[in-house]
Image (tube, rainbow, N blue to C red; front, side, top):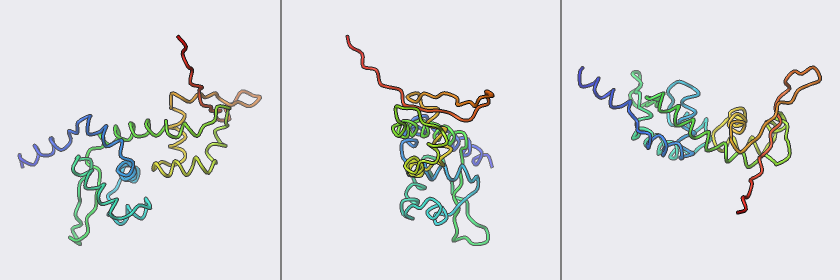
Length: 179
């Protein structure tokens, strides 16, 4: 019993470098974010179908996530051939997802024009939606990531009575310094 507790303590400690390097792997983060969103164990087949990824790609990424101690195997007591994967360290997973979304916000921010674009128009833009899917985000998660990006400016859109109707977003111009 004592040995098991020590293993659990060691298991929950994931270094900042591991979190940072994992957050840069798009396929691994898609798997990790899906497991986090669903908040329940899934098989490799379920993950590959839901994420529209190749079975071997999902398996490879799950093995890497297990090696880094983000994910563990849960065996089915009724059928020992079935293996489910679930998140072990919620705190480290949330940090990795936060770093990933920050990185993706810069990628998605390149889709925002320099002129103002209304938030609802952006959320319905097919190119934006496809890019969000590519990075494993819903369009609302993608929009929130873009809105938080430091290279994107925003302004509240209001109606005549002063009620908020959404946001206008635009990409800040890169200023060139002349010395």
